[in-house]
Amino acid sequence: MQRSSLPLTYPAEVHVSADKNKSLQMLALAAGSFTAFAIGIMVLAAKGIVTFQLGLLMLVGLVGLYFGFGVLIIVYRFIAKLD
Image 1 (tube, one colour):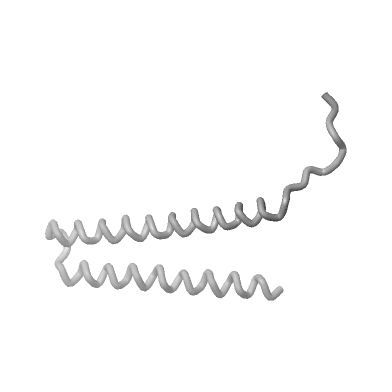
Image 2 (cartoon, rainbow, N blue to C red; image 1 turned 120 degrees about the horizontal axis):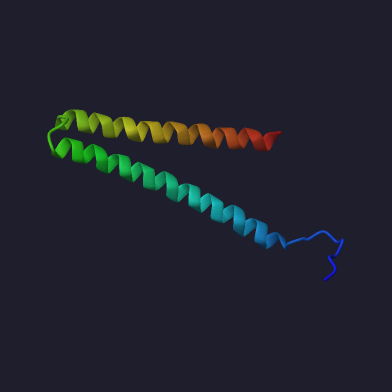
């Protein structure tokens, strides 16, 4: 079989769906890791390894970390689009 020298191109819809699929995978990964950490903190508090108040403080810190890094990522992507 002969190979064509023409470049292989795909419709724009394929690239959009691939980017959207990657974004959904990253969102699912972030949500899954947050859920795993939150459940781990709740288990520590339920077993008495840490006190209830410390468990709540850890959950608040976890939410703060995810929110803060989320804002940083959004700002970084916005600035990257400006260039």
